[in-house]
Image 1 (tube, rainbow, N blue to C red):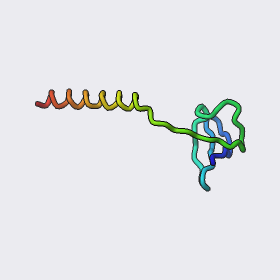
Image 2: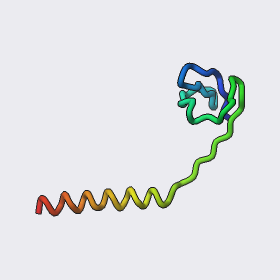
Image 3: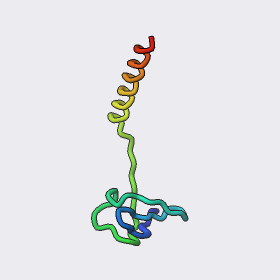
Image 4: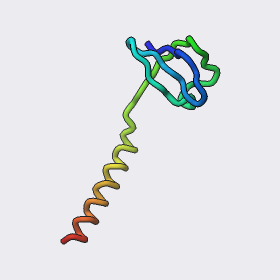
Length: 68
């Protein structure tokens, strides 16, 4: 469970499992207030991951060609 402890400028202080962490307010839904309970969902972006891997491989290939 994530709870909005307080809002401080551009940051929200979020309570989670007995501790707190800061999260940019821009990540929160509109209308969030102190004391609100939040849910969070993360998913892997397979296409963006693949694009980054391809770009990294191209850079490595370029570097190896220049050294070889």
